[in-house]
Length: 66
Image (cartoon, rainbow, N blue to C red):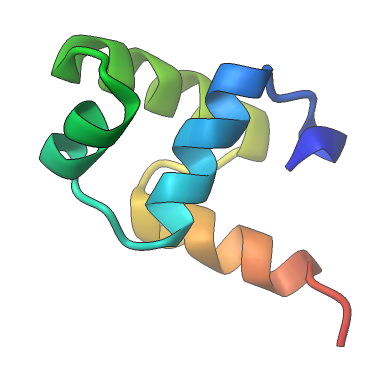
């Protein structure tokens, strides 16, 4: 995730997305608002060139070694 130039906060949100958490679950775990989660997601999607959580997961998995 860091190779894509994500901030530490974006890395944390991306990791939670990859674990399958919903926005509501992320807000509870990260102690941030749903709006903040969505802002991080937008930035993450832009950096990965994707438009959805599903595409993000696929992009990350496609780059995993092995």
